[in-house]
Structures are given as C-alpha cells and as structure tokens.
Length: 296
Image 1 (cartoon, rainbow, N blue to C red):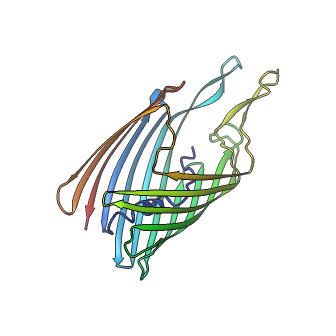
Image 2: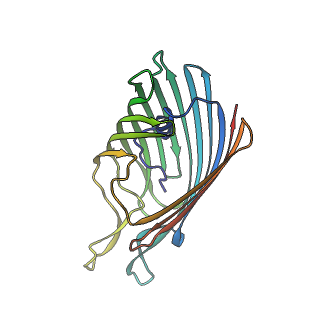
Image 3: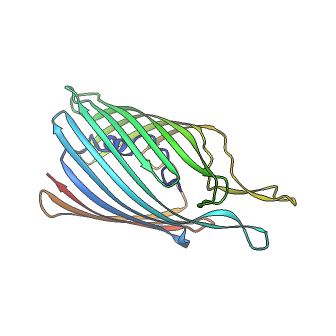
C-alpha cells in the first residue's frame, strides 16, 4: 500500500538535527508502540519501534532504529457495483512495512557535527533505499546558534498491477528517484526554548503515479471505465518551515503526555493526541503512544 512517503532527510537524521543543540549525548535503548485510528474505519496503524543510541567515544555516535508498521482500513476510490454503475466508495486494504535507519554522527574539534545516514523500507509493493548526509556548523563557541546543510537521495521501486492485485494478476516494477536538499538555522533562546527555521527543495523523477488511485475515464459517455490515475514523471517543490504557526486551520487538536523516571537508567512515557477536522468529511483521529527507555 506504499506506506512510506518521501522525506526531506533520513527520518532519524532529521530527528538528530532538531534536538542535537538541546540534548546531551547519551547511550540508550528505547522501545515505543504507536496505535493510530481514524474515524469511519478509514485508517488504522499499529507501529512498534525500537531505537539504540551509543557513543563510541567523544567524537562518534551511532544510532540505529527500526519500525514495523501494520496498516489497515479503506481509502476513497471509484468502484463498480453489480449493475455495472460507478460509485465513489471505500476500497479496503491492509499492508505491513518493515523499515530501518542507521546514522553515524562525527564530531569535529570545533564540535561541528556530520551525520551520515541510511534508511531502508520494504512493503509488499514498495521498496526504498535512502542515503543521506547532513552537516551542522556552530557559529560561535557558545553553541547557541547552528546552521545545517543536508541532502538525500531516495531510490524507490514500485510494484504495479495491470488489474486487481492477486495471484492471477499481471504485475511489473517501476522506479522513481527522490532528491531532497535542506538548509536550516537553530537558535537557542533560553535553556527551555529554541527557534528553528528550515527551507527544503524536493524533486522527484520516474514513476510518480499512485497505483492504488482509481478514477473514472469518459464518465459522461457509454465507454466509461475505471483506470489508474496517470501523473507526470517529474515534479518539484520548495518549502519553508518554522516553529511559528503562520496560518489557522479549522481543526482541533489536543495533546497530552506523561513521562515517569523510575531511576537514572529507566524511564517510561505515555502520550495521547486527539484530532478533529471541522470540514465536509468531519474526520477525527486518535493516536496513543507508550514507551520505555533504558539509559546506560
């Protein structure tokens, strides 16, 4: 079902960049479980994750992570009923994903940091390998201001079916490549707050059509038929982000989290998020996470 979406950077690398100026290095193993459910049985995701971080010495750190997604539900699509008429309904699906990330952090004499990462993700109809590299430069000795530059290339292989997926369906593979570049600025304001600004450039080339996207062609004729959508082979985008809310959206989000530290080495966390969108669809979703972290 192609659970993986192109990211501007390796997911683990991006996490490191967002937090490296505020967190001290530490050795730990963490395990977390996410349960995400949308209304009307649209999407349900179960995702256990594990992450290991280890400081080899003062100059090198390695971080390894893994996630095992199980997704089920239904996506809006055009379907055909027993009378041969088309209607818009929900196409059911279920899939699983196994993904892993590894990031090596190198710290230089001036304490600048270089991140080299590799992501791998596989599903029943999708496989992706994404190498990435990021450099973070501190502008002064206080380490309160940092500039980062990064890039990644995603090599994707998509399994496409001519008709309905199944043992008797004809299938073939297509390929696409995702190029991403980022520049960012992190400014520590106080011991508890910081400001982050980022700009991204994203470009994709190759097979960009969603093989699960079904549309009706020649709708107002006697030759109406269901076909897969067909998108151009190239696209690009430019994005600027900050931690300030620049616009309002007609939605309600509530978040709550609790962290409990049992000892210097063992801690627990639980979090909940409720999302309600006040639009035509009136979609709502809940997300629950529980985790444990062992520091050594």
